[in-house]
Structure formats: C-alpha cells, structure tokens
Length: 207
Image (tube, rainbow, N blue to C red; front, side):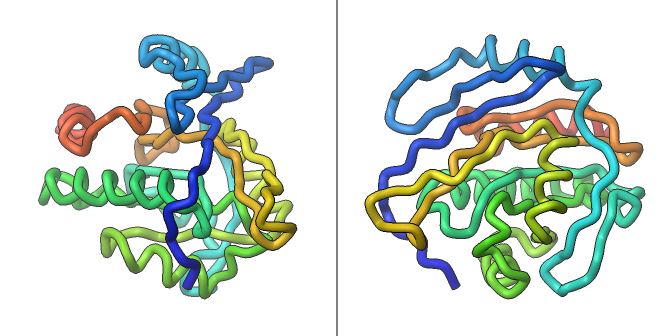
C-alpha cells in the first residue's frame, strides 16, 4: 500500500468552466482564493459537470455512470500517493457520511484517481479501505481517467519532484462534488468545508 508520509505538497484546486480555468485552494497559504470566488466559479459551471464515463472499481469490475444511477454521488479526484490533502479530504467525506446516518444511505462516495500510472486496482482497493466502508475507488487506463476528469472539469498534471521520476506528485483540482441520481450537479465542497458543513448542506438535498 502507498505510504502516507508528511511531505509538503501544493495542490492546485481548479475548475474548468467552458473556457475558464480557476486555480485556488493551495496548501501552505500560497495564492489562497476566497471561498466566494471558488463558489461563484463552480456554480457558474455546474451545468457543465458530469457525464458518461467508464472506469474500473477496486474489485476489478468495469463501472459506468449507469452503475450508480440510483445514488447521489459524493466524488473526490485524487491519488493514493498523496501525502496529506487527499487522505484529509476522504476522511472529511467519511465523517460527513457518518453524520448523515440513515439519511445518507443513498449516497455513494467515490474516490477517482488522477494517477492511473501508479494507482492499480490493488492500490486503490487498499487505499479506500482506510476510509468509509461505502467508498468505491475508481481507476482505469490513462484515457479513461482523462475522459472522466474532463466531464467533471477536473484539472491534473504530473509534478516531477526532487524524488525522481518514480516519486512524482500530482497537482490536481481539490473540489468534492455532490451529484444527484440523475447525474446533475448539486453543489461542491472545498478543503475549507468541515464535515459538519458538508453533512448539513447534503442533508438539504436529501430531504
């Protein structure tokens, strides 16, 4: 299983909307964008989010958007070698789901890799096992990952560090998306949102 160490990593949180690229939510206090700016960008692009995809889950099974047709989706794009931001996001999602209780029974949390080169089915399976029991971890070919990232307007790129070619990090968007069973964008969250805030907001749509 990939080791979760304490290396400093800068995550670019961005959202493509039509021809827009929005960067923010960066670790270490670098270039921090306001929550209002982030929300405005995501909301204006909400109608563009979501669509068909074909990936492989942690059991090695091919899944598509139709596989989750009866569920609200709670989605985060990241990578298993991420030292801090990704596990923190998935932990927050897990706590939010626990707080929803029975109201969240129809919510499916998804971890989607942006690093298919290293994130094999086995790595993804071991990774999501550290978080909420309902998590599905999705991986696939480079083309499949790019296609799903595109329909969710997710930015990502390899960031070669002084650790060498095999020790690269991934810069990537930091939004957590909440979609309804029809695949329609409802809202999003950032690293600034607490599990309590997530649960309260999601509950509004689950009534």
